[in-house]
Image (cartoon, rainbow, N blue to C red; front, side, top):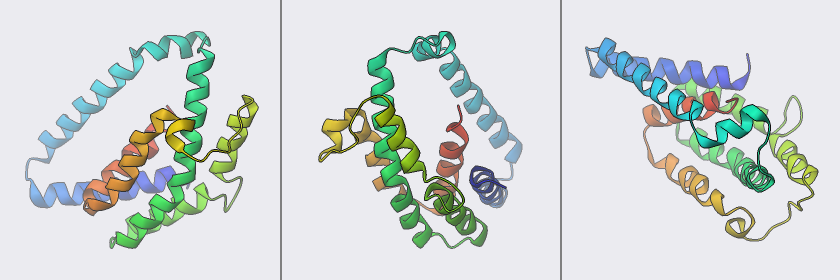
Length: 170
């Protein structure tokens, strides 16, 4: 089983347990979640960048910014997961986060940061930088999120990881 599935399963189980214990109207919560997912799917399908992706005409500057953003994100992902793992007490979620860390670090293949570096270099961009906000201005927001996620409880962390790992292939 790959790490996104493990994170998704552990996240769902933790959220389901918390929902059942704290709210007897789980059906309402599921309908709300379904509506929220449908809303985001609609937004993604109708986002202006979707047109470029569908026609394979993505402007070079957007492609470059995306590559740089992914590289900065990949550099910080394993340390963020390590901080989360140190906080998590739920055994299944802890195991899923460890599996995610190992996968990201390339335990069974190429490290994701290496893939992102190769992506940046394939566009003729040097991945060497001192200030990430100069290198990839859009990366300030993911860095802020990664620093703040550790301040939340396990239910929030599980849900956030579920969303982050589920949306990556999209």
